[in-house]
Length: 141
Image (cartoon, one colour):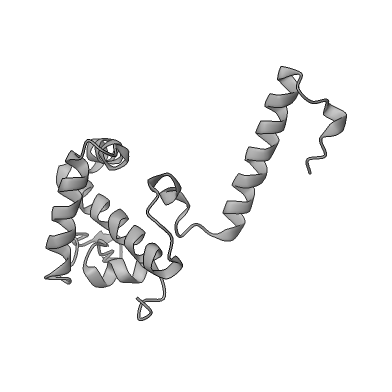
């Protein structure tokens, strides 16, 4: 995993990212590449199994949302990419798989901080509205 500098590069190497060939307002193929001849089919099978799993509904819900926009095949590729990204981060950080925190992967630090500050402000407003704390007790920047 140390060969790839990010999960995006690993997904590109595995052939799970679409190309973007555009020049002079002419759009060419945006299909996924033919790279990853051994890894990509395995990840697609894993994605199919994850979508049909009854133990964890995270990938099933994601698949249903994405398939409305991109179609079933595009959604399976997206799920396969999500799984490969999760695998990459599990190897790099040594953490155990937790689907709840998957949306935070590859997010820039400043956006994470913004979301954290917003969540703190919303929680403070909620606690004030319930009367559990006073507005003077909270110092949110």
